Length: 137
Image (cartoon, rainbow, N blue to C red; front, side):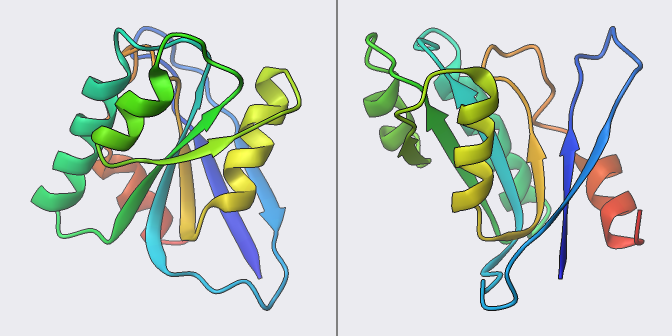
């Protein structure tokens, strides 16, 4: 089984990369979309990113989840994420890549979309990504 992961770049940046990762066949896909947000001290913007994502899911009837891959925040980001309805995954190994990897491993979605929790990504409009993923891109 192939799991597709899309990295969302900020609107001002028109580059993008596509990443594929195979998952063990026994991993059950419970959701259609998992949004993974790596996090290190994002208390100021984290809740709004989670709220935008969950609103997008509701408005588009998508069975989705938000996973916050926390890399040792000391500003209360973990509690903020939980209160906003995200699954928080504590990532002990430091580094952006480790946070992403840990979040991907916990994702139960058929597709994973990731973006930073600094409110530079438009989590309220993931339609183009979802449409492309559903069409096999």
